[in-house]
Image (cartoon, rainbow, N blue to C red; front, side, top):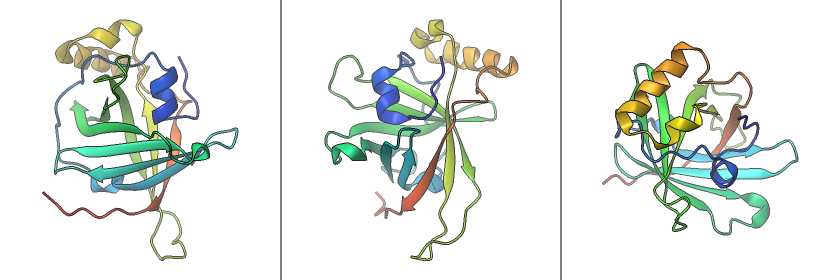
Length: 180
């Protein structure tokens, strides 16, 4: 299965890569580099925007929408960082009320890319590369322990993170965290 240019909302709608369980509960504090307003554009020009806000020092809230639809009905997720060995996994749990998606998980590897040139507001933009984990369909219903084992096996086979299919998102704004 290859997912080339769309991330959260379309992956959730079109992907059968929805997991019944997360690989783990939060394994580390949030990475503040992920907090902000992000955008990407697919090969057809569709613009997607995601807003990542901290809910606590362990959890994010992620809201993602198709900008062509004027931000109507954004997809909502609770997110955190899971780890399997040294692999960082952005784990997103759907908050959709639709029973097909409710409580299901999407798993992404993420890497922060070096900042680019400063923008007009003098805030250096950041980019992140997101890659959906490629696991066999049999992994979709595994419990957390067996899911981590499947991730390790695919990682050892160098088949977990495809060379094609990563999506680069660019930070276009910041959000403030009031702390809880």
